[in-house]
Length: 458
Image (cartoon, rainbow, N blue to C red):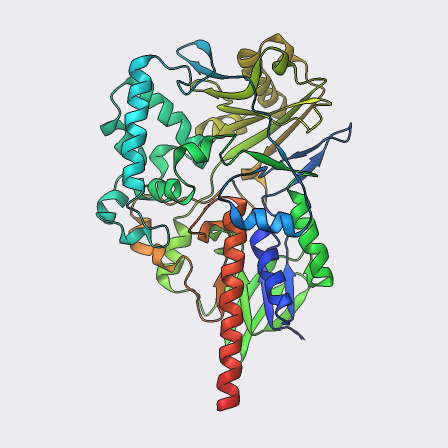
């Protein structure tokens, strides 16, 4: 059987970064990726006119220091997301344009949203991102849903409806599906609400020249033959002399393994001996988000001529959030539209033509008749992707953080865990994936060094 120092399971950002760090340290490594491509939840698409768009993760922004450093190191450029002009809020059957922080709300709703945000962020600041289960009143926060807290703390119907729209926009899950503690952790992890949702100064500030998958492609190119595609892992066996990893191409013997796929997918691998009960319970209670991302190409970014930024929030349409996803030169217009959580579940039950019709109808309502005639339409339902089964990130329901999540990053023997779900900062984002890969590589290299020292001294 083939032998290497480390096997990395998964060729997304976390796995590729971990493998790169291990290889740079002089250790032998193999990356086993189930798909026919690298990138994981990051995937480029090229329209007929050559315009590159992202079917998956698309943006980077301030304080995402690790992914920004990686982009700079690889010599890949950035360009600003278009953000000039007014935004749109669709609520109460009306389309409201806004150019300030009011978001188009009436005074009472705006005050309610602001007060709720301040209370939410004050609570989030008490949650340690590296150990949420150690927060004050952690069990109390964990045993209630995010939605229950919103119902108890919002004061207006409009405010509650806004938060029930915004939570799926951030998590791709309904507020009823996750614990309050999970929501607080995630908000703190990403620098609070405004940073999570903003374009300029926020998580959507910049895009990557050539699309975000160009980062993964550059990392894989550096790794060379160490990356193997269409190589799903079936079983990981641990013994006194190391680890055996069975995959579609055979078996590899290694000293250590880094599993960098989402916990929900990691649970589908067979482990011998079986994973500890608490770790396995965690994976059973961390489902992926549900999102359909649509990229709609038009001949021109017509909304700009109407004084609109391309950013919209809708409390009542299948499409809940849009961004201007056009290329840097504006040679064509691309509207990026998200269908999330329950809305995505409902649209998944329709056939492709009906689904596209619902999305285009939402865009027409938001942006007018010009939105009715796209040149090209791309739809990516991440819940249908065999090796993702959802996006953007896994989430935890009530009680899971305080009962099981201390095992989230804890190695099991020679098996280490990476992936954006394990990140303490920018959890769920590309930056979190990079951070997790660096952390896992550090753990592995330290363990290899310690074993060699023990062997020499023994």
